[in-house]
Structures are given as C-alpha cells and as structure tokens.
Length: 80
Image (tube, rainbow, N blue to C red; front, side, top):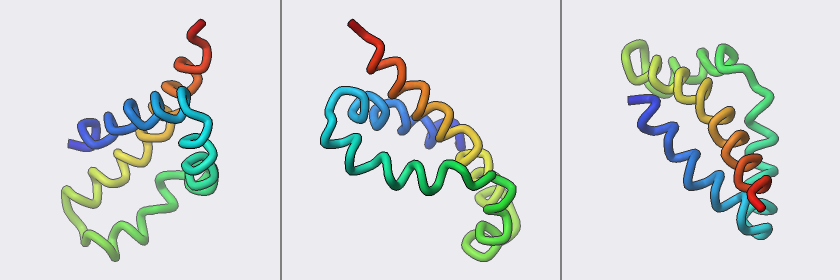
C-alpha cells in the first residue's frame, strides 16, 4: 500500500523535471520535508494514525517517496 501511494512521486517528478514553474512551487516543500528522517516522524504518526498498519505504511511511504521523486526529477532533466 505504501509503495502504491509512493508511486505518486513519479508523475510529480516528471512534472517537476519538465516545467520550471512546478519545480519552483514544489521544491521548497520537498527540501523542507526531505531531510527529516522517517524515524523522526514516528511520534507524529502515532498521534495522527494510532498504532497499527496505517502508521507503519506512512513511515514506509516517507522512506520511499523522496528517493523516487528525486531520482525521477533527475532522470527527466537528463533527457536530451
């Protein structure tokens, strides 16, 4: 489930790589959230989702969303 949600990074990364305006709007948000390690989100995720599968999926989502997004943006920018 977390991987399915994290696949939303692919179209977002394509848009950020193609259009400068999209990148200028979304990149500051990504750069604020990206350095926070997924384990640091655990206390907030427990408050938001409780202890269970959804909380675990959220932590896994955070762990795989940003690498997919950044690799997609880099790949699109390197296309000739």
